[in-house]
Image (cartoon, rainbow, N blue to C red):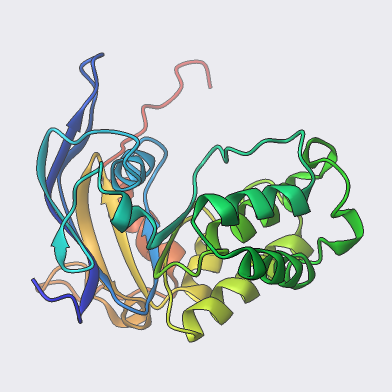
Length: 262
């Protein structure tokens, strides 16, 4: 597998929880280096489970993961230093100020003291956190907390940034600031892997995307191809938007029973 083409490659990934729920069922994925990659699916499709395995927070049952061109080991701290995460439930010490927290994260990543101080101050300005930088994170709005999480995820200049619903529950201005930040980071060579239920945002932001359902990949393509993508080779169905394609692909997988009382 080529390190130069794909920064992350997943083949036949499987995960079943103790409850018996099979969250991931033979997932295959290719994330091109330098892309902004949208990872889409209904609630429960296996997106977060996949991310938690790549983050080293959960073990896979089967399948292979190649990261930066090498076999991935969830205990490999070297690979983890090359990744930045914002998980679905961000973890931080909310009794700390944003400035103190970013400095703490920088030290944990082994950055030199001067680099920690410089990057902390630049990130506070970049994410418009300066005004509240000495206020404890517990008092921040949801959007500001998301910004702190993203700042902490990139302070060590990761090659791969993985974001699980970073735009959920925040206002339009905060969402726009985060989208601009992601585009900027990708332009500087980072690869961004993002999940979101806001399909219009994914279509506008991402260069590549994959749609999964019940733990399997059912589509992967360049975002620019979705408008002319045929659902099957023998069908001439075309789509005006990612949302239209998404609904069409998954509607047959998730049939709805009519309500008996309506």
